Amino acid sequence: MQVQATNGVTVISMDERFDATVAQKLKDTVKSLAERAQTKLVIDLSHTRFIDSSGCGALVASLRVLMKNKGDMKIAGPSAQARSLFQLTRLNRVFEIYDTLPEALKSFAS
Amino acid sequence: MRSNFSLKIEVPAKIFMLRPLGFFVRSLIEQLTDNCDASEVIDRVELAFSEAFTNICRHAYGVTREGPAIIEIKASDDQLTFVFTDFGQGFNPENVAPPNLDEPREGGLGLWLMKQVMDEYTYQSEPDGRNVLTLKKNITRSRAASSEKT
Image (cartoon, rainbow over all chains, first blue to last red; front, side, top):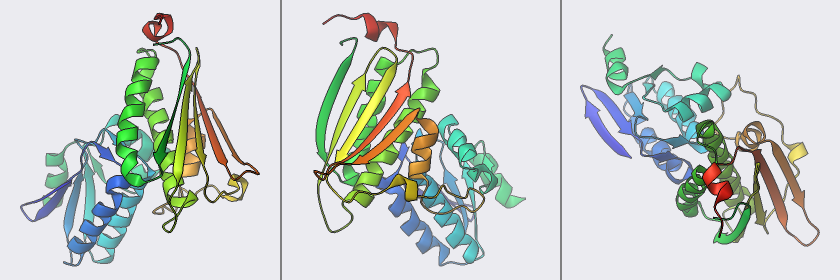
């Protein structure tokens, strides 16, 4: 998992597997970020081949804590497997999803 | 590789085992399934495996106990079977309500997802203390894996 800032937006890039192994780490990281109000966050899934319900749960928890602090979160570059899972669980209606990281970053500017 | 085979491994039911097991299971399924319709099947089986093992780690033994998970993988001509055995706290799947997908939560999707993506799901708590979860998926075997002789 890598964290970097780009033009006022924090980007967290998840690695190949997004499961219970890393879910808590993401939640803890986002919780720290959310302490700064109005945090803008992109979760970059372009390197994530596999996500399960633990990963989905971490995304839900992250969005929740950010919104509570007037922040926002978007998702970039999900794989076909991730898109399929989001659709099956209807999380595609909850998350703002972009095909690529540049598109997600650009959405914060507009 | 045999046309039909089974393997059994015993691992600690700890989350750190999830990643190596996940890679192993995916590699195995890729070898076994027909390349024509494989990717969605592989994704679904990998998902079910991840959900099952995570549930054992989180719920069977909880935070205060440790214990093993015995994982059997069986492949026949047209079916993959995973059997997970633990010796921790059992439960009744009938008592677990399906998730309300219109109210996203942080957890509670694992059991439901296993039932969605696999063709059969059975769970049994045995009198000897074993909890046995069986997941089955119908597959199209690759010609190479089916025909190779040992």
